[in-house]
Amino acid sequence: MEFKHRSVLLEETIDGLRIRPDGTYVDGTLGGGGHAYEICRRLSDKGSIVGIDQDEAAIEAAGIRLKDFGEKVTIVRRNYCDMKSVLHDLGIDRVDGIVLDLGVSSYQLDTAERGFSYREDAPLDMRMDRRQQMTARDIVNDYSERDLYRVIRDYGEDKFAKNIAKHIAAARAKRPIETTGELTEIIRESIPMKFQKMSGHPAKRTFQAIRIELNRELEVLKNSLDDMIDLLNPGGRLCIITFHSLEDRIVKSAFRKNEDPCTCPKDFPVCVCGKVSKGSIITRKPILPGEDELRENSRSKSAKLRIFERK
Ligand SMILES: C[S@@+](CC[C@H](N)C(=O)[O-])C[C@H]1O[C@@H](n2cnc3c(N)ncnc32)[C@H](O)[C@@H]1O
Image (cartoon, rainbow, N blue to C red; front, side, top):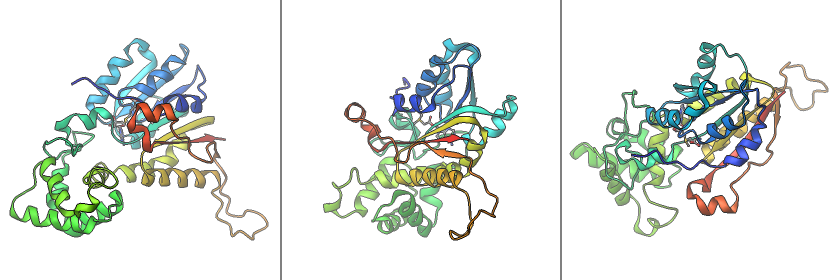
């Protein structure tokens, strides 16, 4: 299947990076290489980019897309939470800009056998990195009803989380739930008819929740942001595109903490905690897609771009 993915907030991200032609850049979520391609186009012979993705299909697609840029590009199949050690192994201590375009690509969503989509019937997989053993099937069949409830409530923010978890537990007691189609049907049965047409497909939130849990998406993001800011050269920028409020909240709060880390009580005349600001938030409010992009790419609907600049 052809790797199809339309990059979101492309121009805004590239502008936001303020690319230095001789600089070193990292794309931590390479995908089809859409953002990386535009970065490469702006680099001189001295400039370079490291592209990271944990998905073998993305690595292959980006390799093809970026092949004309030759040695400027290094592609690594890893989790972006390992960015510091990936760069260290390449002899790089600091970079001039980092991009994260979070979540899954359209290719991953549209490839039925990857098991991300509630619109297709396929084995329950949802792994971004298929070297990982655990799949969505394990979560759906092996998590306790209570843990399923927690995941669907916290990561799907679904008000029917309790009922969905209860229905899943009842269904799997008869026989294991194997496919996205079976799961979608169980979720549909858990949601009262009059709510089924509200706020998108009834299975959307539960699928999102299971995907986030399986790929540890929020944990990875939360644990990586400080490292990424530390990796930036003075004036270097971190641009992050998020797709739901849970991710956005994590980015917003990490940016705030790095801009103003002081923990002294407000009424102290001078700072005594010794924690110094690492830089400043460029986007007080997130940058959102314009009307044209929203019209042309429905996936951009929930996208938000936030930018931090290192001191
Ligand atoms: C939205 S797509 C990126 C698309 C890309 N910016 C483009 O324009 O083609 C997100 C990609 O990030 C990858 N990804 C998500 N979380 C990751 C992580 N923690 N480490 C490495 N790759 C990750 C996914 O496998 C997917 O290929």
